[in-house]
Image (cartoon, rainbow, N blue to C red; front, side, top):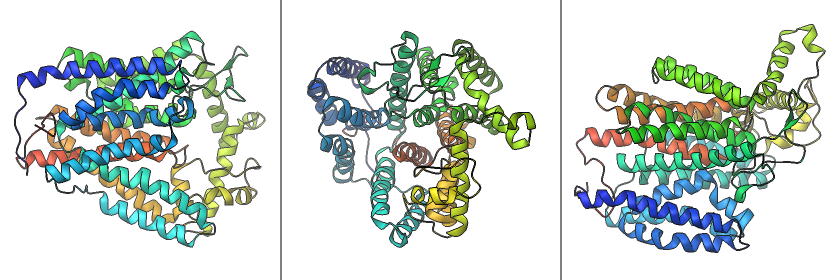
Length: 500
């Protein structure tokens, strides 16, 4: 156990100045980079000095900054839109995290931290490896497996070993909310100004070709895709952040803190809504119910969220047009003759067909599935039998659970749900034991529990892809019980930096 020194008033006072300097420099660099053919050089030059200083004085800032980069997808955007070398985009963020981890291991002599979900994760990885080795297309499977190890398991382990104090966790949560607010603000400004052909440096992408949907006034509504370029995934990521903005509001220490969380909630919600994702809309309603049933949210907060959602509907009535197809599908499944005469939305029928194909694949390969990344190669064949719509290309399952069952078998699905269930149980215990005595910790536990639940809900309509966002949230959620346990054992409470 390492000794700690309480931060001096001078150290505490300099924090806002550090944050302001870094924010101003990085923002100026970003604005210049949007207008420069070698913008990444300008951006790097603006950020190098403060980042080097912070890495030496306050290494924990690097953790929060890298999390901001990962969630905003900034390295990929810099590579695709601003000429950043691919090797830098791929290696830069993880190299920074590994450097801080080595600092902890060597100079602070920290021990390895393994959350309760770790045995489940190792077992799930073992099934992935076995399925990849025995599948029909092992070359493709190994590529997907490599991505799962690097962007999933490795990221999870590194984050769990880096975020060891409450202060560090709070900084990382702020970084997440800053990333979400930045992206949501970009999407909102783009929508209000009708500048859909301006991608704002790659952080507010809007697919133009063949995308969008018809509204009631026969106009075509474009859908925001954020920094990912994929609307539904952008909505999924933003929805995970909403509980982390809403649940901590009541425990915020100052009015400025409450205002900050509230503003973040508005911007992140705007980014989520402007994707016009039907799955995210359904998941949001179920998420509100889950927060109320579990007791994580009070009735007055639920009413505030409901009023805010209604206000967004008034501002963006196009969302109602987008939801019409859900009612059509429900009527079709119920056998409504009038509804059956209507043409179902192509995206809905295509996904339903893929889901049915995934069920049939699982029935034929029930134990360990067909291998990572292999299901799309089976989909076209299996979709021909009793599907809603014939496929002309290889497609994913469009359902997290069916996708995992098809590629990793029922064994893989059980282990996947086991690692999530173990994490949720740990978070709920922290919430229950701290809700009366420590509202900040209980708010963090509830926020991450609902963030995971939001992912599970959107997973009803999306397969297992863009996995680093899921593993990042799962890792941070796993840190909450570890930190709570350290504090209950009398270990030191948060320090500002690794050098303190």
